[in-house]
Length: 458
Image 1 (cartoon, one colour):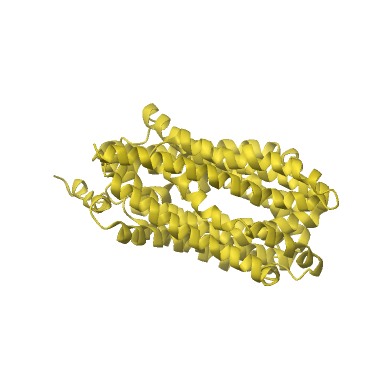
Image 2 (tube, one colour):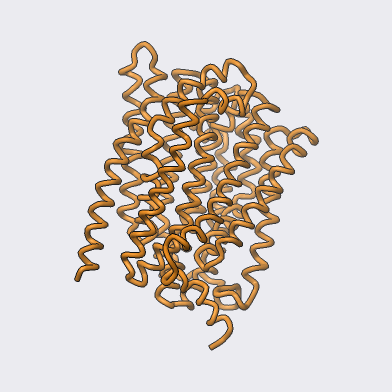
């Protein structure tokens, strides 16, 4: 047996070590990486908010659904392929796992270039549709032009990080993210203030940091002693692998696209009923919640290979234990949003801006959105659980219920119920949809868990 074929012992620990230890080992690097990434986004907003003003924050909010579309296509490939790799490693199918790596690079490059071309050609119409005004579109355009130019690079960066986690290197994945974030934070003030590039400087800093991280990732996959690595014969698209990867990744892809569509609806509702300042408020609150949501995403990243491996190995008790522990931790994390958002909302807003009007206008909405956060953590883990075991249809349904079936109708209808303050109805539509979708998620999980328990008792 070659040295490379001995490497899978690293992944075999997913089926033997205690679930608690594995979750700590795999989730902690993901949490650290995601927290670092979210802190970058928050620091980025702080630099832009204090250096470029409230309208720049509005422009960044308008650009967010555009960025979500880019992320969605990267997720379509990265999450699907990494989940499939975890399952294949559990099945000891190392050759297929290795061919998946080649598909990740090729598909990410193709989709990255395609999204870039479409985005650059129809930039302004897209941004206006996403809620831009004459006062904010210049900020959104300057940021997105740079981000789109490096879109393929961003896809490859996230795709390779997902592969590292699934092949048993969560710490390496964490280091790659931290390196990118650290470089980004250092470069931000240099480009934004030192070179007087404003919002455009923030985007340039992001791409440079990701490029450096990708170079480092490549050196790892060039190591022939890794369980899967670059070598001749994997650089072609495999129809079956591509189809399976995309089918699994379709759930998070649709979730991101749906989230993008929801933000477009919300942006336009905020602009109609509250103007550019309401958009800025929404951007500030989203950045605040994003820090905690990224921690939950780190937990999900740690859970994914554990659940995927044990599902492939038919060790259902271990799989369910991983889900249970992750859901408990996620609920505790999002409880932090609830406490801070309800108790000290002014302090949270002041981190992002010194604009007194924006601060006063954001406090009440902060409390409204924080009210349902205790349910959001479980909801996020539930969707990721179905993705991790390859049940794309259920994950897609669960994602779309919150984003499309509940939130969009509520965002359109609830302003009519708050005749004295329609903008308040827009704000309350978000926690209302969280409550309903959490109930749906709980029912679906209960049914699926019962099926696994029946299988275990046979």
